[in-house]
Image 1 (cartoon, helix red, strand yellow):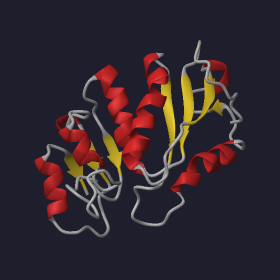
Image 2: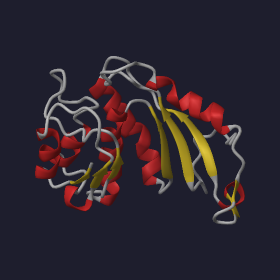
Image 3: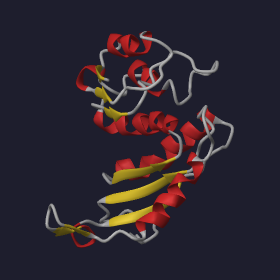
Image 4: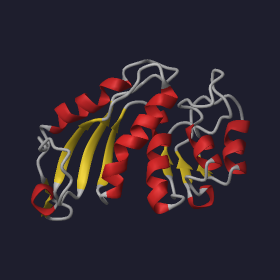
Length: 187
């Protein structure tokens, strides 16, 4: 939508924020190119929403906040940077529209958001529950995100739902483990 680029949050309702990171994915690399690809494709979007009958640009103040710095190869360092980078946005009451990167970065986002809101309810649309204890020997990886978030009290699994779980899993325990954490799982 060709949003104005700024880090000035005065009067801003929502900020698009890129996190070009894909170190914590086990499949094909490339998610780090997501933020720029989304920005490029969104240049073709029009601001009028026919379902709501509003012009988003006239109704809301939306900006492009830029990309947060990441540390390729350093997942936990990137998480710390994302938490710190999101702090001014969240503290200003601006809605963060995060453009990822691999979905492991959701943990850092939840850490920052939950500081303001307390435990969040999660609606996860995914093929996998991402509630494994370890993945390729790592505690912080795209397959462990919501296990860590539940353990850290960032989300309330009883108020959360995971939908679309399908395809190949390591076993029936994948769904059972998510349910044991308290998630409602809809395959």
